[in-house]
Image (cartoon, helix red, strand yellow):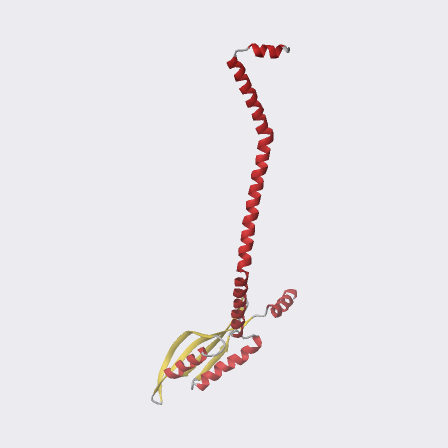
Length: 202
């Protein structure tokens, strides 16, 4: 018989039991450390990745479900943009629009003392087109002119109104009105880029 085994058998029962428990615990610990833990880490990693894939699929599904809504909103935005562009004349239409404003002033019985277009102020896809106006007429004529300008199919804002020079003429109170009529034109980026490049090369 092996001396070590014989020595073990001669030990009291409780010592043999403790040694067996300790040995089994050591074997169990080694199994846990070298076999179970690596597999557990791999398992938790797979669970995490699986959850991430599920979350991404849920997000993608939500986007897919809302795609018709997004398309409808996009089409509405395009319609609104098209409508806005119809209210913004291009550069070629500005002279005709300014002529319409001057004609409205005269049609309402106003005497046009000044009609002075200013420099355009480009602000992205549109530009402000200011026109300095100085007219003479009674209150009703001026108010009707402002109303008619506001009713034009193109956007024209009246601002910087200054009323002065009141005088009686033919039993009617005539007013001298200074104001700034500002319309807006659409800026064609394709047309403006070559011009900008031409200036840069000079």
